[in-house]
Image (cartoon, rainbow over all chains, first blue to last red; front, side, top):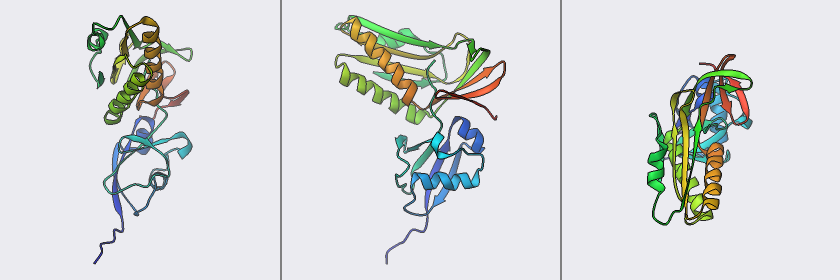
Length: 88
Length: 143
């Protein structure tokens, strides 16, 4: 009998101002199989109303910048970050 | 090649020692330091935050891009995180090449790419408040 996953678990990380707005540095989140990064972020916006619109945010999947349409897998590390400002 | 995100002081001479070799006639080193003003306001200190597990691979990727454009180049980069006082070094990019022209170009290209693609953020503590810098934008910090 095939095992049908009803949810997959991802580890969410927030950085800089997004971390402050979310009130969390890391978070475990369950989402339906087939969820894309944009779905994950919208789910999080539902939980943390202060999070900004997607337009001013970049997503990273397993420590690489990724398109919002990328589908997440069980065990993935998902990060949401503001525009970067390292350097001088 | 060396790529670091570190909470301690950065020694530019150490990075130069990594890239120097007998075939390199030029070493170009860029050091970014904490400035005492921004947007017409005095700045007291900065806090840098990094997604370190991603920042180091991103720096390595920039080093590989430099090697593709300037095949003879050797590259080292370091970025400091945590609280930095005025005048302290936040970032160093050091590039060696056979000749000065390509060393200048590759080093400049490296720091420009770092500023646009490495996940590190600056929080500015200034006379008029505390702000996150996000690309070209300045946004009030919450905590």
